[in-house]
Image (cartoon, each protein chain N blue to C red):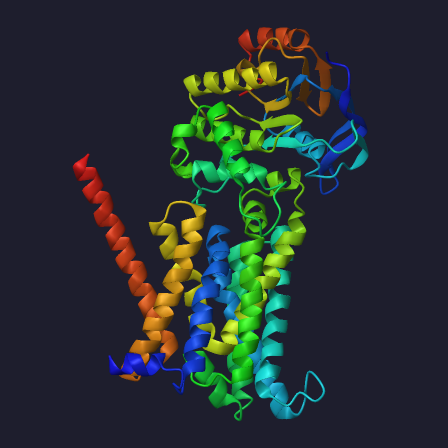
Length: 292
Length: 239
């Protein structure tokens, strides 16, 4: 209880990490529902890995003396630029290939995952100076989140959340029935591009904050769980975010109490919620059948 | 009275990725008409249908739409093309029909809710509004998709294989519903089918597509020889 009060205190040392986790937990499932509904779950695994490759590449460039932007001194912002760039390039190439139906989707995504994973390791091995920071990112240790980065994250994730809510109908109809969307005057390509852009930015920022494993967890597991226990698109969206926020807070609390890395704790917790939801649904279905 | 041309195709060629499926397509659809596009699977009728709806651009030729503006289409797709992973209730599927007119960031008004209710009532599915779309039977889903098309307040109702894959009773109910919508509301209807028995005899126009050729006429002109061929021992044309 004492630790809980400590975490909730406005003077808590790691409060930025807690807030960053809560923002990720709240917004990522809203993007994740489109991964699940569009059957792009594998992409949800590959893209964080690509984003990670972008970060490691940026650290490598920084170490050898190259800079993306003049006067950019902060390693963190440079890594963010690398993350956003790699993710957006990958998502648009994959989307174009998907649209042109070149080869099998699974093959493309599998290849992307493998090459991004290998590239990340190579970039790290060539860059001993950035190794510590990159490894802590890979482990999902959300320890130091500077104020400016938290505010930036809040602004970007907030804007994305407002976009997702405001344009929810367009995103949904374009994803569900693109032909029908065209007949009612929706520009399908435009909405698809906007959605991919949102996905790219959410993943890039998320990976920078909590690492690829945790982002994958928050994108997919809350949406998969909510899909199982809700009826209707609105409850599905609301419950996804509730699961994300609850898991993020409890994960932080548990990791703080028992000195565990926060990211993996969050993912295990999300998985436990998924498992219990599945078992609960099975029991509920069984009881309903017996009562009939 | 049927007078106005609402869609006119002139020297149109259709296909995918420069692969021609049909050429020299010339016909008009008049307001208030019931037109059926009929032919075997893979003959290009859905491609023609999607070209008219501007989902696929024509490879050549022009399509003009009568009236001051582009007509509002109420589109009923083949229900098998819709993924069951989406957790929509029947009501939410119908609600989608209003998305063309709704503004971003604005919640659904009570007028829209009443309109959705009316559309559900029109197709006899008001009781099933809270049920998951994926849990409905094939015939019920088809009626919900018709309700969604009606929710767009269409000038033209377009249906792609509306009775394929549903049982005989459901087929009859769907055809009765479409007939009622055409006669009572005087809706212009374009229906695609490959099933000869689903074509009502009283339709205004039948467009028959087979072996890269088109024939346009009344249902009696075209169907009588086809039915005779179907009844013959070699009659495997539509299977």
